[in-house]
Length: 215
Image (cartoon, rainbow, N blue to C red; front, side, top):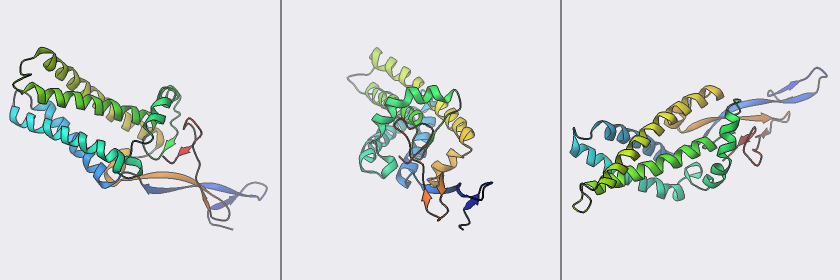
């Protein structure tokens, strides 16, 4: 009998869950994530104090957003945007189920994470682009450019706080260090091993709830 198999009260071999880690976030995506985080923090604390640095950081954010757009089509499996539409469609139901602590298991981003990714990318794009326009001759001092930049920048920081809280909360619910996963690139996955020793990973249902999704 396999060492991963156990017997029930009737002596019948049954499968037991086995934890292992898999590579999820590739190195370019991890570097992008942490460099972008540093740029956002620098941008928040530098306006009107270190304007030159603030502008440089803003241009860096634009470059990072362009890279993420390209990497969303050219990167590794979990870096790509191919599942965004599906995840966004089930995001409302997923958030509703979180009230009862139902998180599902996703190797890549779950629907809530996907929604946060889209919201952050759009807010960052608006903030960075309007910031770049505001220092040009054409748009310098234009009120709606400045107001849009301010609102978008505030939205970015609110989303960042929600993102960090969500990562900590989801890590607590799933008993997994998600911050470490974005450093190492590896996440824990639970599979069931049959008495013959063949791993059988749970697949997600249509909505992605309750079972493990490999995407």
